[in-house]
Image (tube, rainbow, N blue to C red):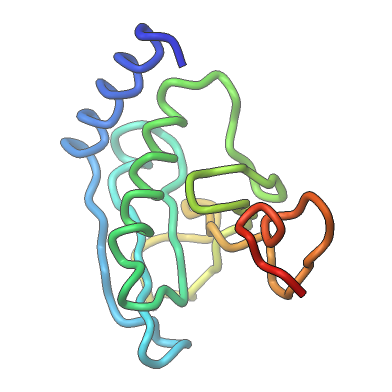
Length: 138
């Protein structure tokens, strides 16, 4: 990343910290884990907010950072973040999914939220995959 790009990204991170909030709450569908989501992207930037479900407590900081970083990326990049895409990010490959319609249980509709989840949902140890890169052996 060039110095100009880094400065733009840092300015966007400051903007995200000022205009959005990360909410951390127990995940109602995954006992013992957490649900993190941003609020403020729709109102301040006309973009859907982001959520991560089923987060173990030890990864709350990583999940919050990921949401803030991807929101900042969305402000500086001309590339859209859309449901169905896979993104390479700091902590691995992220699958972007449509939000869930909670039928009044929360204050947003499905089209106002994008869910970030792991692309990997089972062990895919093969040459060149994340497992091999991380030093995992079969």
